[in-house]
Length: 97
Image (cartoon, rainbow, N blue to C red; front, side, top):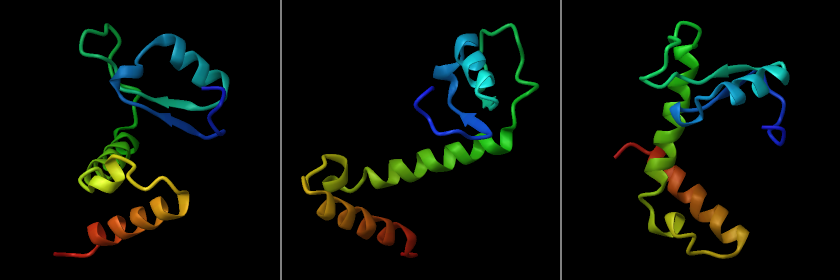
């Protein structure tokens, strides 16, 4: 968490639900947006669900990019070629078909 850039919020999924992580986020003057696990005794009353939904949209974008074999397997080893393929894949996803 110390290596992350400074921000107002730290958004993560249930896998990062621990008080140690939440305390480190609060020490950096950020607000944790991490849902509690199902067996947690503390509820999810303090979570901002709108911000958490944006995390889900980003996850979906990465999932759609992984459908392109050249990106998922990192077929292009050079940075310029990989970024070009990534831009092409984003354009294909963005265009309505």
